Image 1 (cartoon, chains in turn brown, cyan):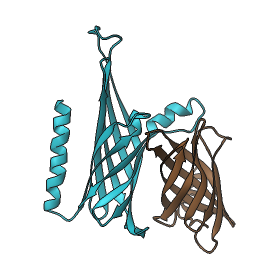
Image 2 (tube, rainbow over the protein chains, first blue to last red; image 1 turned 45 degrees about the vertical axis):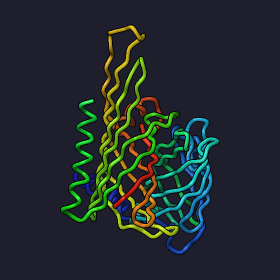
Image 3 (tube, chains in turn orange, green; image 1 turned 60 degrees about the vertical axis):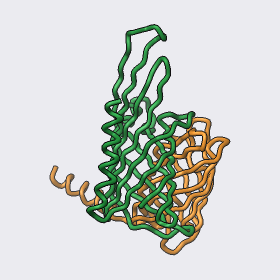
Image 4 (tube, chains in turn orange, cyan; image 1 turned 90 degrees about the horizontal axis):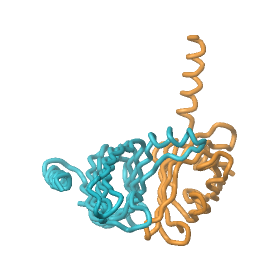
Amino acid sequence: MSKLILVIVFFSSSIAFAERNRGQDELFHINFGAEHEPGVLGTFRVGFTNFEMGMLNRSLNDWTFGIAYVLDLTPSLYTMIGLAAVGDDPGLFSAVGWEIGFWKFFDFRIEFNGSASYKNFSSGGMIIGLNVVL
Amino acid sequence: YDSMVRFLFAIIFLLVVPLTVKASVYLATGSSSVTRGRVVPILYGGYDFENFGFSASSTGVKTDLYYSNYYELNGYWVYKPTDFLGGELRSGVGIGLQYTHEVFRESVGDTDYKIEDSYQYGLAFKIFQVYWESFFFGMENLFGFNGVWGQLSRVTIVPAHTTKVIVGFTF
């Protein structure tokens, strides 16, 4: 039992302190992930340096498209702010997330995001996904 | 209205404290997704020390059939500002609590009111774009994890979240 706990602690600590691949040498990255319902594409973004654009999140039938800036707070924690079209209306997008490199050029992401239009329609939630660093 | 008076006193307190210590104060308005679909102004006050900050906000609506009040309090670890697009980005990540008080009745003549109080608590974050160290706009979000557990039973992974878009002054 104690060995099992040691293995879990070792495994989880190695993940917790792993740095992401994005932003080290490569410039391009593609991010996608599930939101709301597992298996349904919740986001799809193409990134260049610290900018990402594409479908930022979705809420049922409302998709948020836009461009956002990624501000890296720590080697694994980041936050985002951007301009977006929430459904048919212009608005803002923001997010905070945790991103770690777990294998070669793959980063694992957990992100919480929200977007709102000037008419106060909003969407967002939690995303679990991958970031492929090219 | 007593709760609104107490909230205003809290805002005044927030304004007085920075006279004694170094900190940034945020005063703003905007809209919150608690009144999704309608732009109802919110009252927002925030306060950043060097490494820690907090904010309080409130809004509400009233009709002949119901009224509702929303109060939110968030605490943050504040990160170092970063230059961006001619201004600076200020961000914070932490935890928050939202309290909702709703009172409603079936018809206008009905004296039988139903009262519902509810809480959301969980991850909170903010990100502001500040210009000239005095004007800012940005967003603040709260993700209620108590909502997650309820949603998980329906095999989804959506936390109940509140998104605020705010515009205001900082000094």
